[in-house]
Length: 302
Image 1 (cartoon, rainbow, N blue to C red):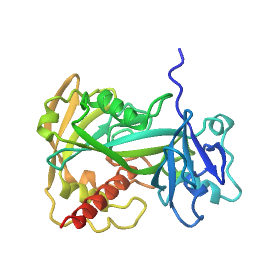
Image 2 (cartoon, rainbow, N blue to C red; image 1 turned 180 degrees about the horizontal axis):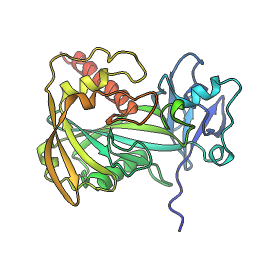
Image 3 (cartoon, rainbow, N blue to C red; image 1 turned 90 degrees about the vertical axis):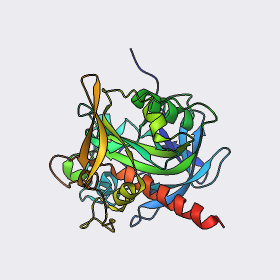
Image 4 (tube, rainbow, N blue to C red; image 1 turned 135 degrees about the vertical axis):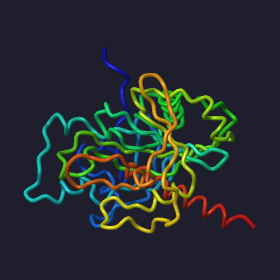
């Protein structure tokens, strides 16, 4: 039986709208070829996730970004051009939502994707998933949060806002194969009034999607955000970090606390060969936006 219809991304420039083409950079529609980011208006309109160069009713302005090594960008630069199989070209670009859950104690929840998943296995990400028909972005985020971790946030116990949009393609580098999945992911910041200890008591993760989770503290999050996938160096990573980070691993219906080397969270995406356990490039982008918002809030206070 067919599942729920997924919402696809549409692009509108100068008043004309059209479906985003699989394998063609959505970000590149709004920025010069040599750049990888643009500010766009986004929102749901008649069952479509719409990106536009002008504001429209109910839209939100957001930063849309792709990685410097975006496979769609590389495909457009290939000479002669690379033709994707028809079954891929006809798939379209799907819309997704990821929730950066911040606790009252200042920690952020990240989960490690199960090794059995076909996309980004063993990679650390916030909870998230596809936008289905007739769903609002926040509803998607809360649904995915509950499905993946068991956490249900009651109305009035949290605030939220859009952080930014990320163009995600799998495999993440063209050197590792032609694109098989193409998404625009809306990262939402959800700020809970509860501590990580309170939320931890209600965690009931789904092993089919999550193999481990961690409540990470700001110094480690700052270090993760400072790493740059596709760069030759790690970036300006804080020097004083704990050697290990406490995580909760899931196996055969039970959970156990263990330590993971902090360096694992600082791994970068390899250009070739098998992937490694790391934090996703899009998550690093979202964490940078989160850290920037913390700095702006601090500067705004007297």
